[in-house]
Amino acid sequence: MHPRTMKFWLLILIASKLVANQNLQNLSFKELDSLVLIPYAKGDYKSCIPYMEAARDKALTQYGNKDSIYTQYIMNLGFFYSNLGAYHKALPFLKEAVSINKEVHGVEHLSYANSAFNLGHLYVNLEKYELAEPLYLQARQIYQVKLGKKSEYYCSLIKMLANLYTFMGKYNQAELLFRESIQGFGEVLGKKHTAYGSALADLANLYQLIGNFEQAEPLFKEAKDIQFQADPKHPENAINLNNLAQLYVKMEQYSKAEPLYLEAIQLFEHTTGANHPTYAIMLNNLGNLYDMWGKDELSLKYYISSLKLKKKLVGEQSMDYAGTLNNIAHLYKQMGKYGESKIYYLNAKTIYERELTGNHTIILLILNNLAEVYIELEQPKLAKRLLQDGLTKVVGYNMS
Image 1 (tube, helix red, strand yellow):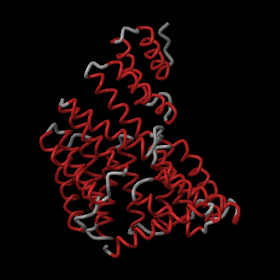
Image 2: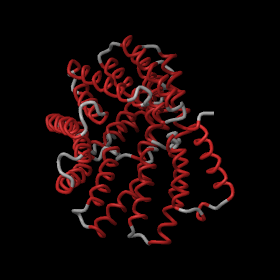
Image 3: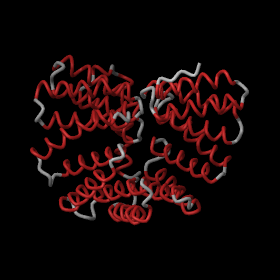
Image 4: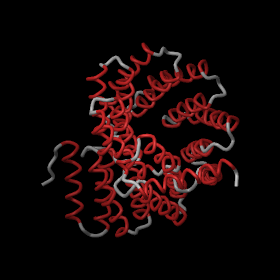
């Protein structure tokens, strides 16, 4: 057995004995942190949470709720819940961290900036962009003063701010910030560094979104080449292949996209394993390709595989799980299987309504699609009720 492999399995054995023989509260912070490493490396964020909860409780008992150790653990909990798509569970932890750092350190401290950035990122996931922007801007100002514009952290922050402006439709501001981050990473880390390549890929995503495919394609390819030259066995290579495939789907060049998706899935499974949320997303993306291509049976196969894996890894209440439910519902609707479509739409609707505001675009789309399904099922009263619900959420209009 290779020494690195032996070390990994030894760590698993030690961790298993610790969990089996001791109450988590009796473990040290170092032991709890070590137990997180194994599931975290596999993308099994759900299994990380009990260890972080135990560490949080231990820190609260020993140091109180104003200590930096306690604050770090509640930020970790926010991070894991956010990555599981359980945003409503992540939000109170990240808000508490901001509040503590503001009280203890003040609003010009790096600790406050870090927690503000994390909370802002969660608001982006919740598509509450108006709440995310001031937090990002505060963090940017602090990073600029404390670290300078030639800091890797500053460059990363403005790249995230650029992504926010992309989501907000402020494309000119986003492009300027992406270019600033690309220049900064190039000067600080060099143009062969993967952070530089990642910034190129984000700018390419912007160009893809606005339909500027000719500028997007070479940037995606350059980002892919940078990562491959840095480490041909890194899972990020699979993500770059996936990004390029998505571009070809947008360009309706499905025959170009298919081999890239298949290569990405194979590479990610080889480097990281199939039990990972990113792997589930790639399966979903391949299902979407076949959906767009009109290959319904293949599409359904990969959507279902993705859904089963997401159920296992992130749970049935996550936004990511809801996204694939919605895709399957839409596919069944296209196939004329309205009974099956209804079930998946209703499940997705329940999750989205819990996590997002009532007039969110995706909720309104589901209400409309579900109403069309009820019409096909000859249930016009239910269809009218859903359309009324949608109109009420948008403009307060009453159809009755």
